[in-house]
Length: 283
Image (cartoon, rainbow, N blue to C red; front, top):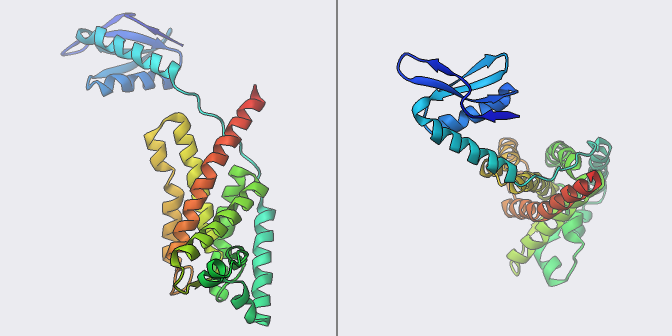
């Protein structure tokens, strides 16, 4: 609640200041004070028995009150963002995923031909239509260091994705974005021979899903700044991957990029759907 208009007058050493608006909370008074500051004008807030008062130069009273009116109108007409539901962490899902990767790696050690039969391969996937390889390659790793790197960061980002999308849907999207990323990479390289393995395509898919969630909020609120902040998970993830060298000396950067891209493309509409579904339940 606020009262816009002249309430009382005060004196400064140089200019005649008047109280232009009264607010019930300090936060709201500070919000409108920013409107005055944005006009490159001075103002001050005082605490009075009737509330928090904003004072400004009397010469600009009309201009400031008009800016207050326009700002108030803008806030009333601003689109209300749909609430994005928050789900449980799904730690048990992340641990189950890590256990599956460990089991698969132990099988690889027992049967080395398993990697050749199940890894991503442009000639086999595109040439011979072995379309299961983009998915199965996500569960194979070159060595123990490669495995541990993907397990650690996969669990971290997977838990964050599960918290946003729900554990079953979130992990399903992680695997789908990773598989589609591997498939697109094979198609790009074909007919040249290309092979890859590792869960990092899916991990980058998880990063893309987190970016998509942030972009969805920015879109609903029409906020350019929040849109930029949406890429924070991607920047943080990229720094972690560079510092730890996940993927070994021959890092499959293209698969990382395609996995992340599919994470964004899949995550944005899904997040929008979840937000609208949550809003309908609140009505």
